[in-house]
Length: 286
Image: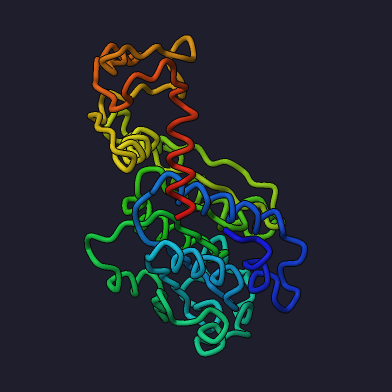
């Protein structure tokens, strides 16, 4: 992310000036998604006036993906004002419209989905997956529906952020999150933002072919002219001992015990991590 550029839409109208912790968390999450190449689109449920949606849409454009924005764009639905949320004022957050949000967020790489969720869930393709899901619906019914629909579609390593969990104001948010994640492998992690968001990251399978760092290393080596099977990369950042000698043949024994041919000629010594890092840095500057 580019915080000095991206912050303007987030704080437009002064609504989020006191919530910069949330802005910087989103920035860090987006950077991690990009670094780890987590697959999938981005989605927000509960867009209101579109301030957080400007960040999500910006990241979708930079990644070449789609930002899905779900909302009634008319405030709360009476269908959700029941149970734990029966006393909530039905006129809250009605000062918005699809047209106003579209003007603020833009259309490029964005899908606006207007209506009552989960009725509008059929807009999402059956094979869709998501790298980031932001749920800011305040009430129990839409939050639990969002969790039930999007959690199975959250990519391994993806972020799911739920607003208002620790706000001490929206009891339905806390109830929905507690009930849904009580039997899941991912614990909820509180964030120190203005309204007490929580986050989970979808668990990855512990397999070598799902190791994002190994995939990036392999990609960087291929870009540099080297070839090595993905499974041959070590899981640690650096070989035991820090350095490995390379003989005249160019053979180098990796920490996993594999022997492979580097096209390095008669180099006497090599720092494995710094070499990979320099190739990756050069690639990212392109």
